Length: 196
Image (cartoon, rainbow, N blue to C red; front, top):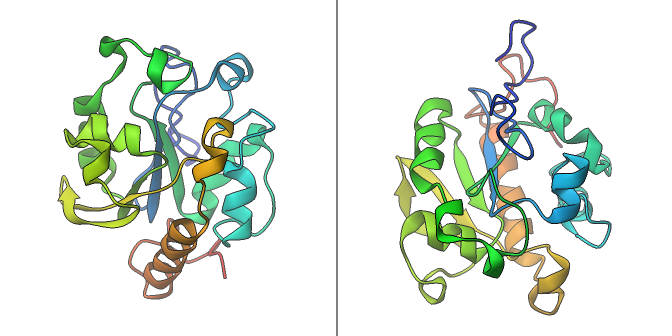
């Protein structure tokens, strides 16, 4: 947290888009790397063709449709954001090997201890977990990352439109609501900002 009590927008300027992390989050969504549009706008999922913000709203993770520039508001709903590759932009296939920083991501999970980590693509999960994408079904996984529940979700990227499925996102939203309703990680000590 910063000294005003808001989310820690980490990265010290070295990240193309800052992390949005703080203790007490129910969910941290982990992307691969910012697209070129997102890097230019310094905002998560800023390509107008990306379904990310619409999907969060459609499944009930946010109470209204947020604009990409509003990404710092997500902790109000118990949600954080980061990427596996924070210092590079572009499509997954074009990222150099040194772009991936799975140990850095693992350290963030250990530090912030969210209830759930959900990868927004199989590629990001594969690079972090050391498993081929074919061994990563969509939905909740049978293993943990640093003791934290892991989910893998279909990419909302325009490049993945033909393979997109809302079902795993809806299942994740249902899980997040159940955790928040039980008081197990609502992102807010006083319970404010819960998504119904």
